[in-house]
Every structure is written in C-alpha cells, then in structure tokens.
Length: 97
Image (cartoon, rainbow, N blue to C red; front, side, top):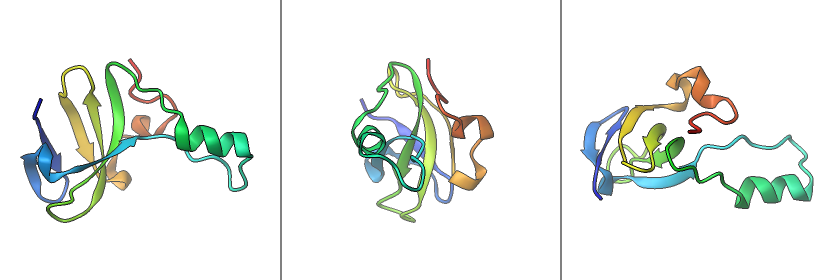
C-alpha cells in the first residue's frame, strides 16, 4: 500500500522517495554489555499500531527524520526532525498501542 510522508524540509512526497530506517529505539549506555548491544541491534517491538520510526528523504534533501506511523493503516500522525520531535515520542515505549 502506498502512502505519503511529509519531509520536514521538502514537504509532502510519495513514500517511494524515502528510505525506511526502522523503529526508533533507545541507544544503550556508552559501554554496553554484549547482551545490551545485541538487544539494541536485533530486537524490535514490531507493534501492530502506532510506532515512531526513522525515515530518510533519499530522493530529496537526504535528511533523517522521525515519523509516527500506524503500521496497520500507514496513517502518519506527524513527522519532525529529531530536534523538533514531540518529547513524548523520544521516551521509551513511545508509540506503543
């Protein structure tokens, strides 16, 4: 199913102009254990519903930004550069259904 995303710099574009970067997760501490690093790299919640994700505008300004997208419908609630993202979106568990 195709949908549109709004690049914070360039405006509304077809999703084909963007690269999906995965769901947003919190980085482990500066010296993570092997288990913490493994969990960060390989394990995702993969929720059915709203989740905060990374996207890159590969066919435009090449900026990385965050978007909250409902994985069931592809409805996009908001998009923002990381510095402008809602504070609640940067907390652990943000976007869980």
